Length: 276
Image (cartoon, rainbow, N blue to C red; front, side, top):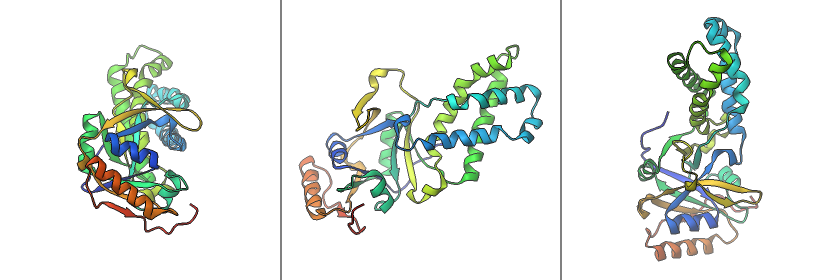
């Protein structure tokens, strides 16, 4: 499911506060997927799984015991709770929909990263870097592979003398983990222009002291940190559409100089300034 290094740049759209924290501390914050803005991403994966499990033709092709298991799992899908942490990036350095969706209206920043350097830092922190999928046919196939692999494990490991309901109870945690690992990478086709990549944690940490919390306008958001190995991971910074873009560029250049980070890598967005 997860990819080898992407030879290029990936960009994270964010606010001035987050830009300052990332550059100063050379650390990324990966948020608990349950607290992301678009909960429909999680529902999308569940809908794919339900669609794969549900067709009568599939049930008819399976043994009676497997069919009973599918019925039990179908009733449990809405109870899946993912415990993964993610950090979002894009192949696009200067995209209007990204400025609108992820940055304050007063102005934002697109931070460029070396994908190869980012990949190494992520692996050290227990994360994987992978592109999101927007193709519905491919997504259904990916979900199907996860489910069939889980069924194979179920057939080998779950005690056959248990009732279908008890067998489903024993099997469900493994299925939740497998679908949860895939869910952050399946996005609705309407968002395909974003060309999104994500850093995805291996799993939620067993040591809860590793989880940090940041304040949002509505609640506290759990997150994990991803230390960056050096300033060389940063490739360029795009200052978003803003009424004071020239001043913003100047201040970012000053910050890079103060922190000893690469110079001459700050640019203004080509998107005309309007009220985003």
